[in-house]
Length: 244
Image 1: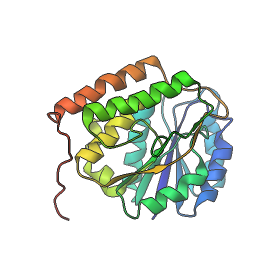
Image 2: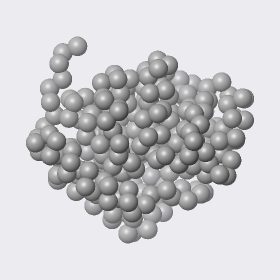
Image 3: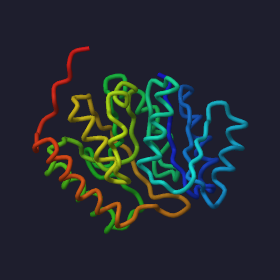
């Protein structure tokens, strides 16, 4: 299954070369798309240098810091236009372990969406302050309560979508960012009747660089959950997908 791993970057020059090496080593069917938002630290130039040496790596340059959600949407469209069988989301900061990538490919044999879960069967988060852990775990409970979506880690950003999932969604109507983007993608996939599964992962705080999460992104996610639930009349189960 030819799979594209999308990695959005903004000032990730310390992490990018090692991440590229680790992703390519994880499985031969993996390809990498770097979506760089004109990083002031030269991440985009570094990506160009890597692309010149690695045929499985590509880069998409954007004019400025346009946000995580739009970076993934641009990457999804890029992948669909080029015929990839599956598309993955992954952070550049090593909080998502490249060694877990084969587990996603294996799970995708029986699923349409595979979510790397920090909270399925227990809590597996390393080096986070307690306040951030409580915020993240509390958000997952909040999302499940309001939407009824049976996902233990709805805000996580390590996941895989089969091609048919992204082709079926109206990507032009997705405008949320950060946590909200992850919740909305999961919810739309689940509500559309796709097979969504979670696999356990261990999440580690970033090795280098600075987190891009802001208070605005958190508040957007909190309110967006109500918008999704209201748009579906607070329906607590997915729609039945038509037979292929």
